[in-house]
Length: 443
Image (cartoon, rainbow, N blue to C red; front, side, top):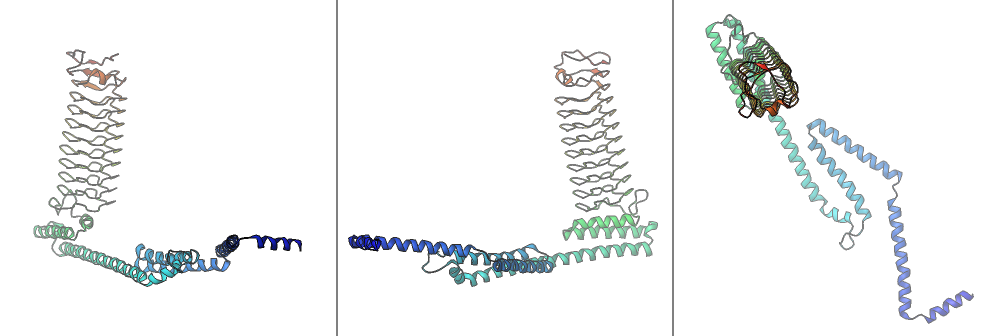
């Protein structure tokens, strides 16, 4: 009773401004409480909402899977799925964020006004994308059908010449017809931009025993086999001399004892290929990838291997007389007992290569990287070694007679024991001997 009287007295003493301020504070507190309760209630995700969300995701997943199975295209699946997910996300956001800057309109109200034109626009884009991809797929199928028809016609024609025209008996007329058919087929494959199918032409001729090097019935010297796909192909003893195999894929191909003399292998890929006892004389191998290739006992004289990758390749007992290797990558390659007489090895990276007993006489190794190479018992007679890096090189018992090594280069290695030396370098203070002597070690 006393408190009520006190409150009544205080109320009588309050001015109109005080009353207004008091009422405003009460309304503010109620508004804050109401807003807090609203966000609290709306932030609780019920079990039903979670179940609904999972069902929606399941439906989206099923629709995406069906679209992918039909069109085999991720974009056709991705766009509709993204639209559905975005639809529900915006709807969820629109119900919770009431103020948007528009009078008495939620985000969801605004989205509803623009939803139909947006959905129509996105649907049109999706349909157009799907149609374009379907058309591209149909074109690809048609092109493959054309290629298959070209190849089948080629095979039928060659088989007919074998069975009825005595092609395997080297009938001159049949041979001429077979060559024309082969060259025509290769040109057709070129025009349709499906050069990789050329590999099937070569393999068919090989399997028909028409391009064996012992008695080739068809010559591929004029054949354009550029960009042919011959990966893992078995072409041992094949006659591919003079053929254009530039940019061809010969990865892991078996080419042992084949004849590739005069062929163009520019930028071809022969990674891990088998080329034992292959004839590579007068061959163009510029920029060719021969990493890990086996080239044991090959004959590759007067060829061009400039800028070729021969890293970790096996080149033992190979013959490279007057061959060009300018700028080639030959790290860790095996070149034991190989002949590299008069070769051009300017700027070649031979780091870690094995060159034991190799013949490098008269070779030009200007600016070559011979770091950590094994040159034991190698013949470097009259070789040019200006500015070559011999750091860590092992040249024990090597023949360095008439080389132009400087004192600085000799001091890069401490393995000169029993090597034969005879210096002609203009800046060397060591006078060239009249006869071969063992190499001195300069302090």
